[in-house]
Image (cartoon, rainbow, N blue to C red; front, side, top):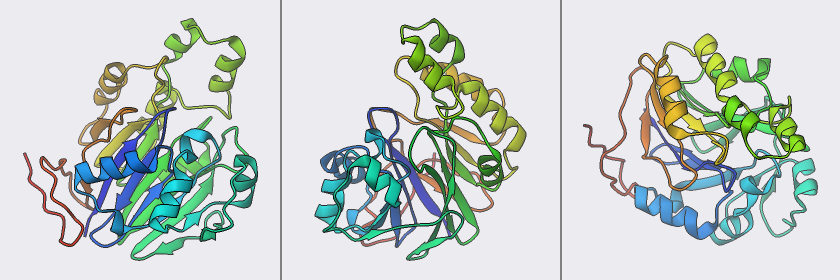
Length: 278
């Protein structure tokens, strides 16, 4: 009874998060090309035929850039709200488009996906928690501030993708125009390292085994800096920095143990995922 998860891409150049078990899997967002999604999944031993749906968090291009070609080629249902379709200017008449409602779980095979609203400068933005048996994995990115919705769901997760978009000093001293700095800093912008760390320190459940530091800014953050910051407070939680350039390893999430990433990748198209541990 496990979930297998990876950040296929995470950053302003594209976001795509894979969550699945031995039979069913979904993507949260499709911000990289279909070809790149296929290539990264193949490299990790993850099979496209196990993908059953794509859930879209909001309309910004780094979350939908590869959606059309991916859904068309692999006949994937798209879970997306009407305001997101409208403001993304997507034409999805020939796709299996399904809406979702906040707090009402959607069943995809053996997975249950629950959306909830968040603060971000988009038309109708959502975060998601994916549940299998008693395992919860959350995707918490593109968030202006950690509202009660985020806190409540984060505190129940065995693993989470959590936005650590910017270092406050790097942003303040950097070359962005002031209006853009204000947007990023704002309540509908992005989470700073400091905000995310406070959420982690105060509301991490004792059973959280993995935390993926996600959606790092290319210009206003540093993977080494944020990794060192969180590892000072990590305890038994494994800290992984999700990259904007390549997928993370696949990690195994179980309800009651801390696991390590697989060290080689065996195809999971037709057989149960086999892991080799360090």
